[in-house]
Length: 133
Image (cartoon, one colour):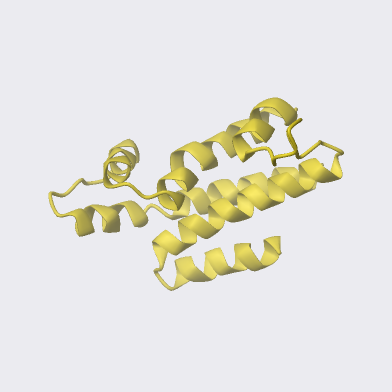
């Protein structure tokens, strides 16, 4: 499953489907991280039986500080922007990434999506660390 999402993210990037690439990279990172934590015996559910959010798993269950740092960056700076799109957040994202903010919303989204290489590289780093253990 992880390979399918990762391959799809890279193919989307190659086809200039940058927003799709960002979302798929974030999903790949989340699924791979959850799978590794499950393999390590981490309880994936809260006491009330509901699944833990990725942010909870990062903060409370991940022990490796390097993995925590990369996972937080993927989740907070990239994945959340595209999974729950909001123009104001996208504008902040573009500014944070050093991009150009346009008065035209479509242009701003276009500039933001062109930064897709960053989450792809972060996901690659996370996968390398997860599978190096």
